[in-house]
Length: 329
Length: 273
Image 1 (cartoon, chains in turn blue, green):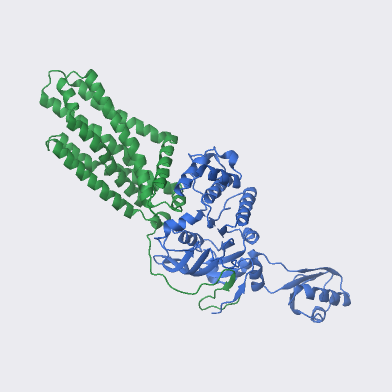
Image 2 (cartoon, one colour):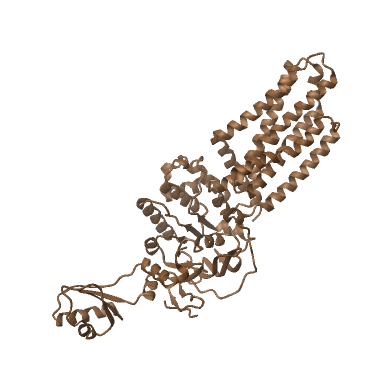
């Protein structure tokens, strides 16, 4: 039961500022079924925190629990500095915004009318100004009078984001905001999330799109009923994968053992294809020149030497492969 | 956070806007009172000048029964749609993510139904009164319709009967998983108070101001109790997930600081990171 800890520079809360979210051994069960169990993490103010996991992992239930829509079975949390209790529900909901996967707009009402309802629910004093700012932030001012039923899915997501901006939330929960969107609409929503980060909004993002999480998130967490891993994407890569170099030569090496063992810092190697080799190394930047010299000295025709890159998807798949419980449900 | 009339008003405004944009709702709201207008008028006009007072009195009582069916029946279907309908179109969850309290949501929705239903009932009643004065040939009918107790009964019972139907309808809606089932049950729920009105109309009870006030008070108390019961039935967790809340005392424990990479080991497994 070892708990490794490493400071994540970007995820570290500014000194003196309390975390936006603190989750402590939180568990939710529906009868015999466990939605998520013993989940603990914290999110710094202004951080974009990715929450990843397979279908049925408990991501949406976690969001709903932190949003006071459902009560935890055990454990505790604080959201925007307010202890998570059902009595504190209205106060917590005043300081957060949740955008569900389906934005749930009133299709017979216009964009503005939808926003007017929510501005009223947040008791916004300058509702008209606030709505105008929110629409401008998502670049929807021109569609303000359109019925929501006539909008494309991408535009509806943008209205959902505008709605989430109305109360100037301290924490914004985005549940699969790009689910079902085409690449252009996905890019637009991603740009909006970047905009939120620039505004200093804490974003809690659940997503299946790993490249999206890698690009947008300061830190990510992998959930599959229990929390498997939390950290910065690059740290997770380093933790799950040994650092390696990929060497490609024009023809297969006659004695690869001799060549690679002569380079300091190469821990092991394995062939990958006819004339390609993957070297496990201590420090790719320092070892690469030595490997190059060893190859040249051995008379090899070097085609390329590159550091092996692992995506967040590799991390995700590695976790899935590692963990029998983590297989998609 | 306290009860907010601003939030209640926002819900009410939305409800009324949605009705205006829904031709089906407007149509059913308009057609039903029309039916309840035509039937009493035919009854009143068919009573000739020589018809006995007792016969005319029975006809007037029947007319009042019909006039009270509208405010009881009209809101039942709409109220039964109110929560389960929002759930089906996916708009309930975003509403519940706001500071909106369940009492504000329920009252906003209830007022949104009661205003048009009672408004239409009063309009129909006024039209019957005017038509009777202008065109009825039996003078007893005209004077009976204009009696203060009858007018008081209509003014009192229309909102109270509507209230019953609305709260029962919303209660059903908060627990139902299907719009059609909710609407059918909601329609049936408007029958019990009408049964009492029918007993009065058919002289099982002798109508009097005292009886009207007592019955009105009973309905008022029932409406308040129903509001409380429906508020208690409104379970966010059940509405969102289909399962009731199961809570337990919170547990203690250390929380890692933000910015910490933490590998949670598997129970009984190796931490092979």
